[in-house]
Length: 361
Image (cartoon, rainbow, N blue to C red; front, top):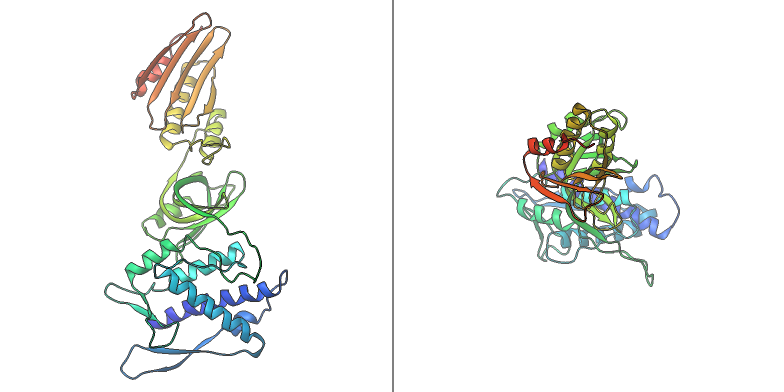
């Protein structure tokens, strides 16, 4: 029965490749509605007393070429994903189809338990098989994040897509969750929607359930994991390691801190870091102290080192507290007629709050 599930995974891979091949041959056209269903594998026979399943592809006269090319293409990607070879890709796939294709390849071997293996013979039965185990599958999932071009039209100069994976985080609102597929959708502050997987940590399901809602009502949430950029733009989470609800007071400066939380790396069009969660929390506690003490409201700014700067500046001088990315505090004070200023550093919130309450008149 597990074999049938794996055969369905393989069939899905070939189906996606067939649609891509048809669209490569018919640019700008929608694939026929019956093309997908034409890709069907049936079990030719199973040798008595063995676990060997022999498949044949039901030939559909109208799509023989697409079926043949698609199976060859799918087999090439599978063989590369579970070896040390460079992994090809289907250049005609849309981003959505590309996601489907990678997910389908990554699902091969999903039914395996320790000490089990799945062997696929893409060539002749006498040729070495593609061996899939729990260990090789994890490696393949990682390698599938670095795919190169495949099925390129002859003599066509196509720019290869650049896919970069970094450990990072984004802040937005989680709007959809699929517990079976271990996927989620997230809307960022600018309205951009991305999706991702949380395949390596099932405990994250409850964390996601606590925050999933509509983009209008859901809580701000920081998702951390292996974030992929495609051609320099945020693409998706290839895997997720953390889900953290972010809450700010319903004040003007609380809304300002929420804006800082949503900043992505390079928000200054340079090398600026994301604003850290501990820096945001430290800034929130300081601003609560400002309101509680009746101190004039300061300017609040993000720093390119991942912190928050709280500053009072007028003709008499400058006073500031910078909450660093690690949650520590640096204070600075100078008068208009001074050439220098006084600096101090502390990790103690009470000392930072005491600095705030010094008479600023």
